[in-house]
Length: 566
Image (cartoon, rainbow, N blue to C red; front, side, top):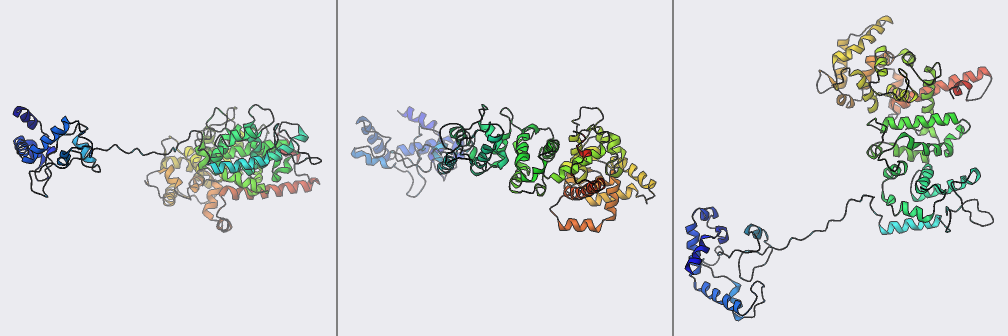
């Protein structure tokens, strides 16, 4: 017995003594102290009574590990252990629990005392906190009340049990007509109009998305959409709880793609051209409709597709301003007031500028054509860089020729050097070694031609050293030894840097500071450089066209010269 007790004492964990007055480290270093305390505790009369009581309870089959379960008169004796310390001092040693580590048990401070009266706390099971689902692969399901409200509106618009199940407006003699979007000519307009109410009132989409939405639901191309098919796609597919950008993205993209291509925008532009009141005058000129649609798509990808790979992602769509432009377009009847992407005046300026340079009208531009842009404002060196396809690879398949899409990117970059796509475009041109910085040597290479042109025009030349100091003061770069793209994007005047280097006309205009232009900018601070340029050019082109019409004795807006390339 004594040998067993000795072994128990030798295997004691000093921390089980729970004596704050004595350091546990000291007890570990001096196990004889722990052994002495253990023997002292065993010699106490109360300890002897407790041990006998526990033995009797064990013989009687009384459960020892459940408080209050003992019916024995000796159970009261187990409510507390005898203490070898005076009242109010540290608690005595408690037997080691088999349920876990003492460290774990000490953390369970909220548990009640054991049936043995041990000061050690029983480890309680950790409370499992239920975290609600926060990720839904196919979108968050709609709340019950929102779903019921949406279904009620759907039931109001859909009816019957067959076909498209949308009420036609041309009901005759009180009968309700069923219309099919796939029907030819006369019967097609009614369902288009009716499904617009579904797209606009229920889905809250721009009205010209009705056709794209219809075809997305009518996967089989049957020409009809039932109530159940619509509910399955819009409600059960959780489309109604997505934000507008995600809804548009999912409607337009191909099923096997996670991005949008230029081709994906054609259906909504075709519907826009067919239904928008501001574009009715183009109904008789399908060639201009096609060019307008192309130009809009090019402008969208120029500004929104920041990666420049022709694959517009959902992230890019949300970060851009296309969604706001689509909503404005659906509410505004004057197409020219929608300055972002869709203005017809902007398209007309771009197309006429291209047509002026394309002298042989093969819809391609070479270096000699482009050098004439802006009354020969550009230098040969910058044109060479453009045609070396450094800032952007040409979509034209003809060697040494720039196509219409390439020209759209060029003119948007040239006429608004304050935009980020423009800064990136011209930065690549000036960065000769492609190391991401513009050094004085690189900038001087382009400025040398500007300096030569100023001398030829009998203008007072400005030395590069003076210009460099002016540019550094203007930009305020982090390191005055070079410019980074980050430096240029952080300054509103950074576009003037490029004008100084390769556009003589704009450089001279910047030096003279035309008060009229400055006043215009202050009066309309929301307009971009591109907006002002397009407005001026449209007025000029309109006046020239009116003059030609007057001289020819014709009031026809579309003369043969503009329609020639088609």
